[in-house]
Length: 225
Image (cartoon, rainbow, N blue to C red; front, side, top):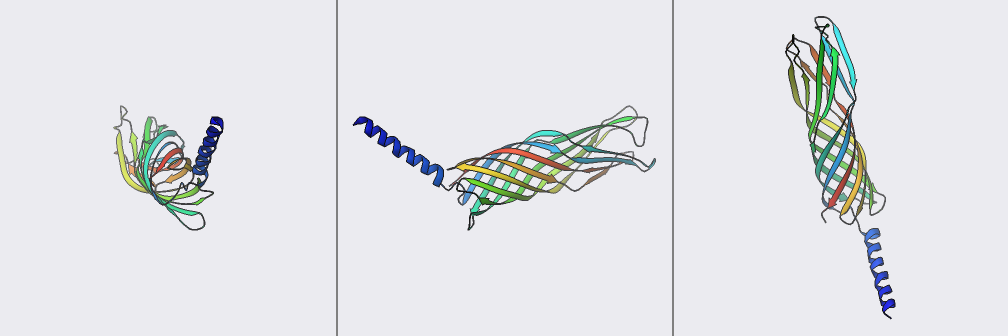
């Protein structure tokens, strides 16, 4: 009799748990928070040009860096399994690239430059489609505020410099999120781009950086509902 009772309890608990997994609407209207770890691969174009010698140095910069971010968002259910979300995200970390090159003005000298992209805050729309109550596919379209900088080390005959500018760029991407009840995990791809950064050194050498980044990440999510 006791075994029958235990078996019945087990069946009831399993049914309740299964109902939670399958039927709980994980992406209902409401706020959520998430945190992510990201691998960012820069795809920048760096150029140095001397008008005095009409000499140009150009290099494609591809360097990877780990970043992190934390975000606050709001999701809204639309008819026919469609979904619309909005996120504000704060980023941690920088994407840096180092360049060792021959001079364009002082062509007998070797220079060392460093470029930096630092995203501060991003604001995105995330329209999506719910495959079922627990699985969401979404796109990303937004803008990012950040800082772009170019640094040159001092060498015996030339004084170094650091020039920077705050810029607003754009972001597009794709993502997937799997959630059970209030918790979720997912993955993202984001392509980030800023307009070109133009600056000059004290010796009138012109620099141009076109900042582009491919970002892959994993995130965890908590839905308040």
